[in-house]
Image (cartoon, rainbow, N blue to C red; front, side):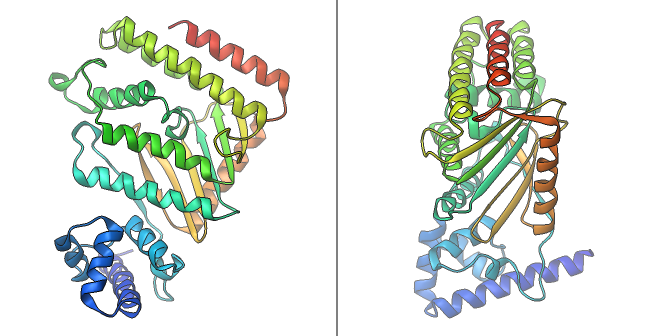
Length: 328
C-alpha cells in the first residue's frame, strides 16, 4: 500500500467518524464536552482531533462507540475503507509519560466492555508468564518491569530490583488488567511446558550479577508459589474463582517460539504478538485475527488439556513447577 493510499484511507476513517459524531451531537459545544468526558482529554486535545490534526486512536474510537451505543464497525470500516495493518504499542516503561498511562487505561476501558457480551473470548499462547495471570501479584509485575529496564536501559542507567520504583498508577493498571481479563466468558491459556524454568533461570542470572538481592528473590519466590496455587485452582475447577467464567488450560508438549493472543467481543476483533517483554504488535484486522486464532487452535494438537481433565498430568506438572521454583 502506498503512503498516499494509506493516508487517504485514514482520512476516510476520520471523516466518517466526524460525520457520525456531528449527526449524533450536532451542537459543537456539547460534542466537545462529551469527548472531553469520554476520553478524559483536555479541550485542546479534543479540538486537535476534530480539526484532523491528530487522528483518533483505536481505543478512543472504542470508547466513543461505547458512549454512543454504536457498533464499532461503523467507525473503523466503511464501504471504501479497510484497516488491515499492525501497530507497535511501544510504551517506554523506564520513562512513563502521561500518554503511556492513557494508552494503557484506554486499553483496559475497552477490555471492560467484554463483560457485556455472552460470547466474549480471549486466548493466549505463551512461553513467558502473561500479565493477565501475574498482574495481580505486585512483586512479579515489578520483576518484569525490572527485566525490561535492564534490557532497554544503558549500562550506566541500570538499577537493582530493590531500587526500582513502580508508580502506584502503573501498579493499578496491571491489577486492573488482571481483573478485567477475567470477565471474558471464555478464556484459553496455552503455555510452554518450560515457562517457569525460563523464568527461574532468568532470576538466577540477575541474582548472580547482584541486581536482585537474596531477600528480594525470596519475595518473588513467595509470589510464584502463590501464583502456582492460583493457577492450579483454575485448572482444577476450569474457571476463574473471581467470576466463574470458563477457562481451558493447555500445556504445550513442544516449545512455543513466541507469544500470540486474541480477544473478541461485540464487534471487536483484536489480535497481538508480544514483543519487548511488556509491549505488543497489535491488529484489528479480521483476517489477521482469524490467522492467529487458527494458529493458537493448531497448537492444541501438541498440547495437553489440564483444566477439569488430565488429573495425573496436571498433578505432575504442578509438582514439577514447585520443584523448579524451590530452587530459587
